[in-house]
Amino acid sequence: MKPDYWDEACGALSAADPIMGRLIADFPGGHLVSRGDPFQTLARSIVGQQISVKAAQSVWTRFAAAAREIHPDRVARMRVSTLRAAGLSARKAEYLKDLAQHFMSGGVDPSRWPACSDEDVIDELVQVRGIGRWTAEMFLIFNLLRPDVLPLDDIGVLRGIGAAYGSGERVSRGEAIALGETWRPWRTVATWYLWRSLDPLPVEY
Image (cartoon, rainbow, N blue to C red; front, side, top):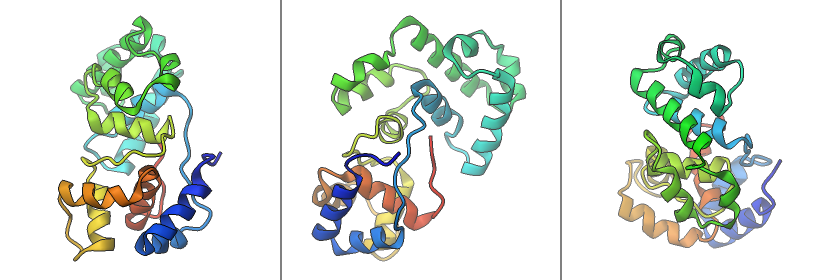
């Protein structure tokens, strides 16, 4: 389902920024999609860290088959050896089990998030091993569909800005921050189109 702000955001971005307007026009009908399940979204983000999209999907498929049910209680009980056999590194296996335990203990509690700011959600999520700011920001974008997230640690965003607005080289965080100010309060939407400009296949976490 399309986020309820998507069309308004595309119109505002196109009016404020002709270059972004051209990127939006290149991908008509596309929009951000949420998988909807917080635990699964975070688990996918952990699995996908530092590997290609194709490799991440392969590992996820094997992990899902081994787990049978991707639920905190089930993942918490899985052996590290089983997770390793699915293609996960020892560290990622530990991270997934820590994530499951945080959900079970209430340390990570999705019921609180509708009333929380973006930064409050990030602060809660980074308490989990293996979840840093980038992973938390991916969660804000792909699960909570927050409209104004600009992930400055994302190489794709920096490359996309360089390709669309500069000489093709990756820009600095400072340059990204300055340009991002022109996209407020729809920086998530701008980010999504920057990703599409590099890879037409949408990534879903």
